[in-house]
Image (tube, rainbow, N blue to C red; front, side):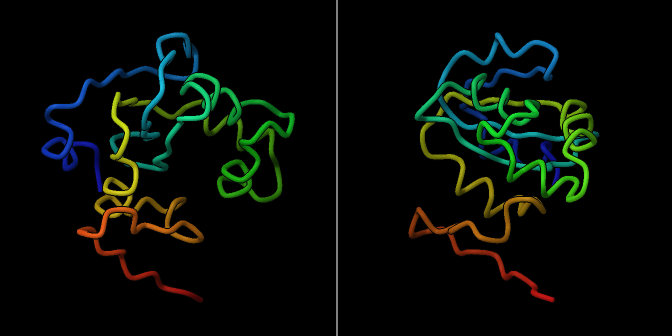
Length: 131
């Protein structure tokens, strides 16, 4: 699913867009969407720390909390994963409760396994195909 299709859900949200070259604009708490060419790759939230801190973890070679996503992007080469993630567009949203709804609608490949998608009782989890 693309960012364009999520626009109705996010129509009243305050959004900030950017990329990994300038994380300073993401100095707030909330939900973020990582995409490339309008294709959503990952949806996450940052409430214990600011979004800019969380995003920086994905492009840091040290194990600061971004290791899981880096492994999903490239299982064998963390440096290559960092290069790939650094190319992704960032859309950050000032909102507390969008993450699970967005994941349930967009079903991005790097969120589906291992994450409970049912925080809001009205949202049904997507079916997950296992190998």
